[in-house]
Length: 143
Image (cartoon, rainbow, N blue to C red; front, top):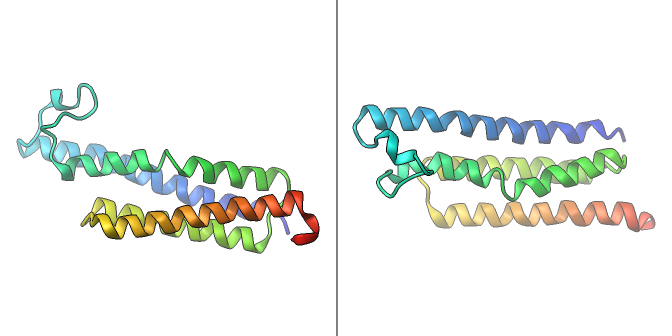
């Protein structure tokens, strides 16, 4: 199998990250025009005065730059080592779908339990990606 298809879920996750990043100034300006925040509330990040609904996109953006780094790394290793197979590709797309759901929950109604379940599932899928790649690279008879 060509390794190129593994790049598509990477681009999709990057697109989600840019979408959430673009939401941050929109939410902040809307809050500022409504008088809920002032510029100095963001001088050192976000002050305690910043309402939760204004902080959520920023926190979600930070989430998209934390654990997903491991996703990008495993995908790049798979691509460069030409170790992409259908199983790896399915896991990659499943991971991206779970992160989309996680972001949607986080930015909208933000039920912590729902978010936790989806986050935990995404971490398990990410672990499966790493295990699958390890098997492919180091136990070739098992792939």
